[in-house]
Image 1 (cartoon, rainbow, N blue to C red):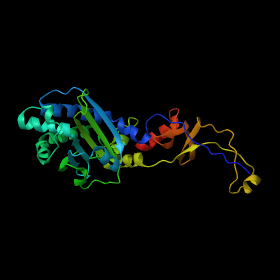
Image 2 (image 1 turned 30 degrees about the vertical axis):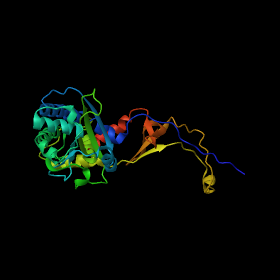
Image 3 (image 1 turned 90 degrees about the vertical axis):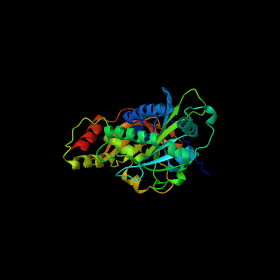
Image 4 (image 1 turned 180 degrees about the vertical axis):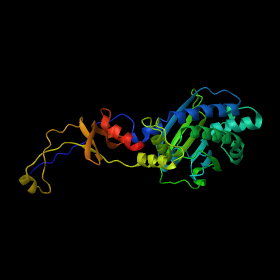
Length: 315
């Protein structure tokens, strides 16, 4: 009786996923949000806030609700292109401090345990409008003509379940700031955007083609560039290849084992499907990343491949 050998992949990879890495590196957006948020919130509290710990990540709608849907204040943003363009939200400790400051002129911590209510939603509206105005300015500097920056307040609620027009099937990307690094359970201000929109901005603002001038009087040029950058390119990771005679190939059958003596999981080839066929673009290693099988690139992408992509994006 023969024996079966089962291969178990155990090596864990460190690094960031390709899909969210570009969005995370949008320093103009995240840096602008941090600067404006600290200033606006600090002015509302009557103090200077100089420290904040940022956090960001891509989440499904379900995970976002699970992580942030405590009873707090949510402000639903829209624009001329999207019914749901984003959220601004505040944790209960920050809501309490802001409301107390608004009503009595102090920010005593003894009030921070109170649960936000409808009055808090309305008390924070003027500050939220300042944040929306700041967001417009930040977006207008980094976006493409096809990504609207004319944010407006559409709705407000104490729970995400009360807000409509948010696609529960679409991924979200959040950016939050924990104020006063030395405090436990610090006040938090957060922003959330549709991930697809941020990904589009990231693609269009890619440094490899950002210095190219496009004719502002020809919207078709920008549209085609956007379409090309968002199109999908098939990548494959090749374990190994072997050569067999035509006769041997004709006798292949279900259950037959093909030997791959040259396989090494630390040096795999990543290929891209192009019009002229598959081309090698990088070397990689196989492992586990966030519980999924994944490969980590060992070197920069093939120079000619990158140049062809850039040429395709601008021609």
